[in-house]
Length: 229
Image (tube, rainbow, N blue to C red; front, side, top):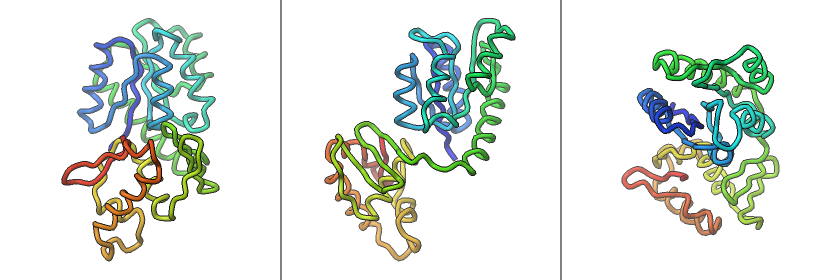
């Protein structure tokens, strides 16, 4: 499985090192240079884990951590706090109180960095297996109320069929991933082997028409299928 890791660091060199390590292990990285950008990207993509630098340009990593924990969709996301400065016991205690899951000094030791990320993802997997999914999903100007199965785009209701809704939900839960037609078929049918691949194309066409300004985010991946970007 490809995990989405949010990297929040205004130091380009550290950012590139972390990206290289994570991508070598098959993870997808989402990069932010400051807290505001990080919060926006996290709400759009719901990362499986975040790596946050202690010192950022706009606010501290501790303040960003607190913002994550106040968000219903992000509060369970594990966070690795990193710093190039010496971490005093009182600083670490404050970070733990705000919800930090682990710490690491910069520059990174690749083996330790990779092992810590792996441990956080493993822990998150077991937590999320028992966690009730968020009732509301947000992506750009789209809001999905999963309890009511209600979708709005630009604050206007969108009337989707059962299959169109299931497809949209599947895209949102696999943001950034290239999804082939067999995978999409399995998401909407208990017997995907009995459904033609062209059916997916038609459902996608109808879905794009209905979600208006958000249609551009469902991208065609040539010779593969589709991707929500």
